[in-house]
Length: 612
Image (cartoon, rainbow, N blue to C red; front, side):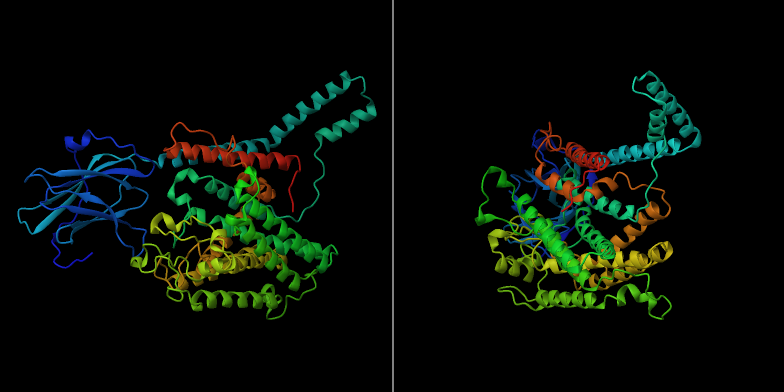
């Protein structure tokens, strides 16, 4: 809208006061993350009220409604509007007669609050005053998160204290004597008891079995479990809080962290398992067959669980979505495992550590794989920034819709979207991307599309590099930790350079939908730091057993597939008394996630693991 001949604007300061009777008698049923805004117009002209989210970069204003002129001087006309409360918004008020911007009001409304926006002339008619008055205080919907955190923290503390007490020699001796006396009494009263049998049973039931040494690192399963538990929680809704949902376009939320971490730790596991099987005598050809078969299984399972109407009859090819989380995992696993089979070594103990290049041993020995990944990354850069996209700027990384002032409404994702539509077809990709939330896009876009799979390969390969560090520096905890931290620092520096330490102004912004290069380097940086913390506390100092995350980490495929298939069944979902309550959604989602952790624990105790 034109800003020529702008009327003077007064700074807006939120006030607290009672609102007029004309609005106090109105009742509007509000949903989550909504508030009531009453616009009171004392001017002699109609007002057009528009809004724009503060998270929307270079966006058009969207019209909220029209407020008629006041019926007489000093008597305002009022119109109620429902506004969002997830992010701060900027209100724009324009005069309909001359299409002039009268004022802009930046404000962050609170959930279920009641607000009034008064628009009137000051004594000098050339200046319009816009002021926000809070009529009813909003509710604090974040209290539920604090309560949930305190409950789980209390349970963790109680578990730690209980474990410590049970580990004391006095307590262990007490239970030893009790269990010994009970077993003796049982054998005396049993007609089948015999002296020889008594000794055997006492030894079997009281004395712990000798523990067999295991090279499996609990920290890796714990890391995988952390990623998986958060993934299940956010997939179930995350209490409907915006930061537990995927970012609309550029930027990060909690939900954007977990999938790359899962890909990262998958790469780490590839390095360790390939090395172990080669040492055991497996041939590379036999391992390649297993890799291909496992990738096919993952892909097929993924297609089924993201198209849930298979329970209602045959799947329709017309709208079958092809990309997905497990499909992306399958493709990344296939490529990275093949690269590892190309360069992996069965024996590392014969390698020299005295040469000048030995600090780079874990990289230089695998240079062919690094070269392949570098070539793939060059392909991603060329396709992203050089591939012509019809009716869109070359190299466009924006969301389309109302972003970029609405100039490229149908250009969501640029080259990534074009490649998906060309290879898969528009009806076989995700129809409701997260960019719809803020940028009001209306074209399909798949965050697990073809072009982004190249960068997921890079993420898995960086995880593979972490595995190589563990292999080459095994039992040298300080060397492993220092190299993880060096990689984290290096990847963080690359991210800072690519993004210019900003959300929207960098060369390549952090973007989960695109799986941009900076997104991978940023999340790989976080993954290395998190892996250091988990490795140090679980495997080095043994301060933490990894519970409860260790158990779903040991059965990750079963938990992921199960939580998708049984999402709509009790106890993972039930009818809520108030479906517009963050507290009820948070409770339901935490209970559902805890159920899967408990299921994983039971399966672990029974030694049931689903491996493909």
